[in-house]
Length: 447
Image (cartoon, rainbow, N blue to C red):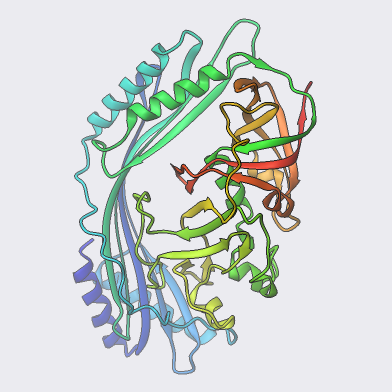
């Protein structure tokens, strides 16, 4: 997409149609990916997708919205015309407007592009990774879920009051998930994920080592006794839990009464003082960071929980206006502007971590590595969860894989029962987090 040409076409078409107030958000994505199975290619894909969202306000301030993937001058003109006609039937209450920060400076990120590798290189690299994984242990018989992909993304935002944003970035990712088979034993699985600027900068070896180590650690499993335990969440598992209950921080959910929080919740303690959480899209570990949302608002760091206290909600321009706040760069333009988190960052709060919370010497501790069935096991409006998980029982510092178990509880109680937030963070596809220890969670096993 030639964004300069496209933006010029949008302005020319708006002038031709007599449209005085409009904004446009657009993106184009070029991606290629590969999957393999038992030494042969399973699937290769390449795509080029463009999408543009157009909003037009009429003289009565009513709003019309349309979308298109036709980036020709005629297609853009038709989208503007359709949005203009739709504005005559727009809502009369809580009408979106331009973000007040749409012309504020955004952070300079430097060159974040990389040349895409040829498809045959993707396949060769993934086939080699699969073979190494299969050769790492006799019990590993397959890598049923795997993928190596690269993406090139161009985004822009423009409005009739002079706002203009553009950015271009590239990144690559790999995912490996292995499976075992042994006589008289249940199949066991484990996986790992890595993200990098390009294929050359992707930590494939680290992904292989983590997948292998996790898979082998699950081979000798045991049943466990149900009860209440001290639980240590892996970074992936804790971030999955935060994402499942992100309505706590979502201003649109609060206004729609679809949140565990209310407007009055700001300033109240909702977690242990050991926990701090922010939404930080521009964190230095976030390879795929975007510098503005689809309303043109700059992204950045939004403190959500500071030493256990709820300090902010995530806002679009419309929720910010209704709650007398500032947009936070979490708006998603559409027929209705929605709000979503960008990149969670979990960190220790004020309290010191105790020396007793050391995984190398822990005893009778449950290590939850990966949560499952989040789509069905979470009641986000009630705050309750009941989720099967993969993990280990820690006895005298030794890891013993758990055959099958479920963790259940209430998210509010979980947050307040945190007794340790470690300092070393790990990058995942949902953010960065250290391991988090929680006291007294209910675990149901088969023992």
